[in-house]
Every structure is written in structure tokens, then in C-alpha cells.
Picture 1 (cartoon, rainbow over the protein chains, first blue to last red):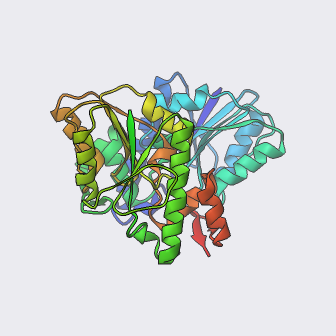
Picture 2 (picture 1 turned 90 degrees about the vertical axis):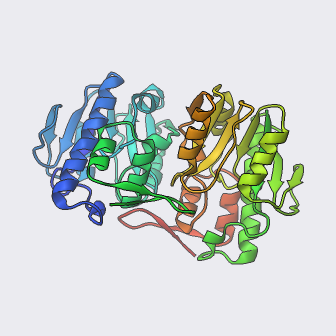
Picture 3 (picture 1 turned 45 degrees about the vertical axis):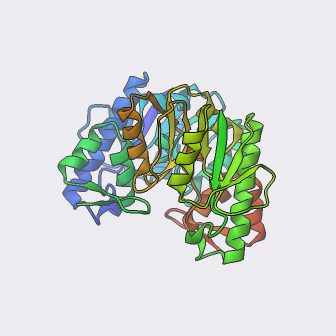
Length: 202
Length: 202
């Protein structure tokens, strides 16, 4: 199994702009990436970062300026062995949670993201391809079915929580175990608790 | 293990008012409750509904007009055997996901809800009590620690997704397996997909 971690090195985490400025978004995104790489290493993987520009990180980096969908499909096309794709913004990922992705044995193992995305997958079928637009988890199930690939879905709150918007930072503060939590605390991001769901403030 | 399912029979799912009128919210909430009860039965439980008013449902109902926190604490106080509390709005709950709650063997097994809530727990410690205000998952961890109870957290996207707001209906449409999905489809609720996260429309 070859693991790739797509990473936007040019404009990372733009939807966090209400709480983090551009430089901070870069630093925070790299910290989450480092956490994800650590968690992958702890479950025995040797991930390659698939970035749209050079990035200084403690792992091999493959630079591909194409769109996410095209870059991932090129990886699937050129890699003879099974491929896992794990997003770089899974700030709650732990080795235990990630093991559930690698331990499942279907042709295509899918991890939905909240809001219809696909936060990670393993593909053991040579013709599986991706399309990250729209409700990609639904499309990926259909693509797998259309090529006769067996599918399995990993049920993990940790892996289904991608950190995109300010409210997602609350999940990281509540449940995170990596350096990204320390980064947020150092940046003065705090939980704001009232009667309803929590929020974050600075 | 005795399982109780708290249910608001008076003003259920008020935050769904942008898409469902009052009568619909009652019908939809009862449908999700029935799905949760079915899933519990399929993993060998015999749940009691803990409602704030009478409700017509295929399970024993215990009516308690007090607040959720007080009603649950009274259950914990008066029940000699271990207690599980499972919320009625876990529209994605499956028998497999719920089994992970019952199979864990800590004194207090917690299932976080998105946004800091506590969607379910099992308590095998006689003095564990709840407080559902604010970021309850954090408070429940602290309460368990303060009484020397061991804790375990269940990592399940299905169990951590409570259906509170219109956007949560998208998760139900994408991943639901019970009658609540059919109810939504019959009511004309559909996924709305564009480049970002999905939404629902009617």
C-alpha cells in the first residue's frame, strides 16, 4: 500500500480566514499535515505528500500543480500497488483510527467527510478513479460500483472530521491529540461555550 | 444493562423549523426515534423511552417532565444495574455502530456529539451523573475522572452525528439506512450539491 497525502501549499484553509490570517493559515495547515504524517507513520505507513507547490515537511514530497482530482487520478494511474489517499486536514486522526482504514479489506475502502466529502480512501482496484467535486462520497461509491469493486465504509468520527471552518476548530480543541491543538492554544483560539453547540473565539 | 432513550415529545427538533413545520417536526422526530429503537433492538437491547410527555411508540415509555439532565440523573440514581443513554436523534445509528458502545468495557463509555455534546453513554459506575449544558462531553469526562471511573470514547461518525439542523439532514440523506431517510424523501427534502459542502433544499 502506497499512501499519499494531498496538501494545498498555495492557499491552504481559506475558509479559516475569519479567525486566522494568511501566514497563520499556512502555519496551521503545515502543523495539521505534520500531525497526519506522524499518525500515518505510527501505523506503519510511509506517506508521500502530494502538494501543489514545494513544502518543507519531514516526508517525501511530490509536486503536482494540477487540480486535486487530476493529481490523485494520476497517482492512481501510475501506481501499480494499492493506493491510500488521506487528506492533510484530518486534525483528529489517530493511529488507531487510521488503522481502521488500512485494516478493511474491500477493493475500495471509503471514509466520508462531513458534508458529503471523501476524507480518505484505500483503492485496491486498478481502475478506480476519483472526482472530488460536489458530494464526492456518493460519486465514489457509484464509481466503485460501476467497475465492480467491492466497497466498505469506515465509521470514524475522527476521520470524518476535516478541519475546514472556524466551527471545526472546536472539534480539534475538544478532541485533538496532536501539535495542531497546541498551535491553536498558542494562537489564543479558545472554546466558547454557551447553551447550544460550542464555538471558538480569539 | 438498561437502555433509556430521551425524547422531547413536546417541542422536538425546533432547529429544523427552517425546513419542517411543527407537525412535520413531530412526525420526523418520531420516525428517527423508531429507527433508533429498531437499531437498539437489533443489537439485543430492550430500550425504554424517557419522554417529557406521552408518546405513541413501540416501546415502554417513562414520562418525566423534568429537564433532560435531571431526568437522566434520576434514572442513574434509581437504576441498580448499568445504564446506557442513547439520544433519539441519532438518525445514522446502526446496530453495528451501537454495538461499539455496548462492547466497550470502561466504567463510563462516552460517545461525543458534534459540537461538544454527548450523544450516548454507558455508565457502569454507581455515582456517575450527567450535565448536558454547554460542552457536555468535556464535563462528562471530568465528572468520570473526578469519581475515579475509567473512561473510553467510541469513535463513530454514525453515532456522533445528531440530526439537529437542516444541514444535518444532508448527512441523513447521504448515509442513512432507516425509515427517517424515506420520510425525508417523501417530504420532498433533497440534497443540493455544488462545489463546496452539500446542503438540502425542498
